[in-house]
Image (cartoon, rainbow, N blue to C red; front, side, top):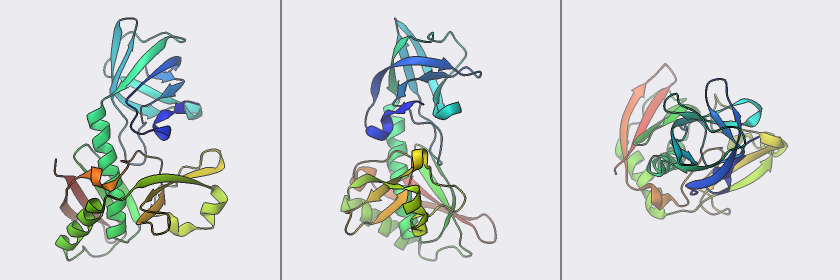
Length: 239
């Protein structure tokens, strides 16, 4: 499997690695990577690969077979051979904005306490779908609560629990349609706030900022009806 450096340090922008495979679709598989693959509503990272004076722009990153991660070139071109040592570099501004939006969506799931049926992240905004019949009446209250948590500058950290422990604590799972990742029998938890008085704790495999203050000012966007029991709520980064 590909070693996921973004799990060790979401702020790591560059790293050396060795090419271990090519996918049939033309992706490059490295033994270790800083590139996050598409999943959990978060887009795959983009950036570049460089080796021996050559350079390949990476358009996105996807999950591949056997827990591997494939970096997908922006256009067809010669790839580094298997065994080649390369340097990988993220499009950091895009990734960091994904981290800000992703963390903000965790806060939205606290402010709007209903089951989550879907979600998506971009570099400028994100949205969650909630299992709720009626749209929230007080938009200003939602926006104020989100920005209160941002201003609180709470720490964002991770912890791990066994799959059995998670099964015994189903309240931690907010997503109704997507099962939490359970690699090697362990589940990664993302915590916002202190352990003794956490704002939020939920299973998540994505990348997040280190403190909520890093998210910056948030603006509530559209609230759409997407079914009898489904409301879609958008939030936007102000800068």
